[in-house]
Amino acid sequence: MEKMIVVADLGRLRAFRLAPEDPLDGGNVHAHEVEISPLDEQPESVHEMVTDQAGRFARGSRVGRMTGMSRSEANGMLAEQEARLIKLLASRIESLAAGFGTSEWTLVAPDRICKRLESTLGAGVKDSLCQVEKADLTHASLQDIEKRFGW
Image (cartoon, rainbow, N blue to C red; front, side, top):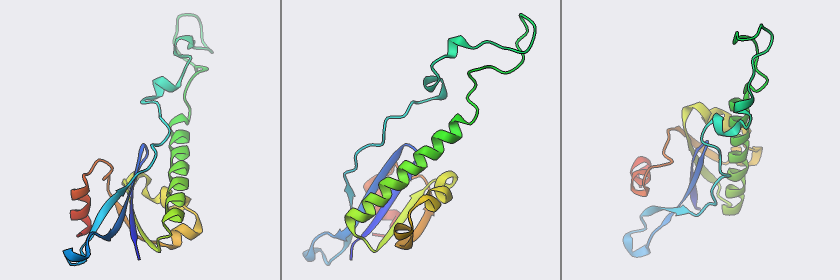
């Protein structure tokens, strides 16, 4: 039975398959990183998402006074983008779990998205989830991942 570790953040997804390396090695389990296509390229800041920055004009007050609402404010844009990325991560994790056919897997995600990501997962994938860790290990090396989980 193979196990899988999924390490996720809003901009990156990594998966590791745990399998015996070599029978002559005593059957020690090692992590092997799975190739995953990158998530859609995201803008680095809100400024890059908003295309009409130069077209902002205050309204609702007299000329020269900068009060009132602007037509180009980003009300809820970051929360909407975060929710969209969490749904994208959940769908990618579901396809990974289906492709591996693993019966047990571990989710590692930062505290700020961990519960939302877990609740967005489908029922079948959520049932096979055996462990959840709140950490950002998306930039950790393979050796650090193995040490963290004791392999």
